[in-house]
Length: 155
Image (cartoon, rainbow, N blue to C red; front, side, top):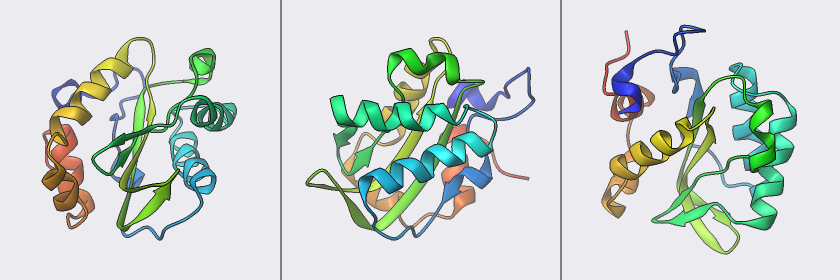
């Protein structure tokens, strides 16, 4: 789990906040979805607004769909300075959304400060290793998704 559910010491916030889990999202243009998930990270204080453009730039140079119905949009390397703290935002598309010719059901926006992005990617891979996990998550509540990624219950 993300830091075994530990909180970001500086801001006393979690990598995945309950408000950053959006369920039953309607399919949309890839760019609009990236902007939306990036805005969630921005509104949570994880990134500066410029990070959203860096996420779009990354997508142009290296598509972030990783197979298994998952896309992990994140900024290009030079955008690291726009990250205030690590965080993720989750959008669930039960009917899928087109991601450059591939249907994805789960979009997880990532902002990883320093080397934390590697830990974040590792946890995501662990939680969603099986295609059945992605299908299951489309039927979960926000609280269940939060618990899946953080290893702790919401209060």
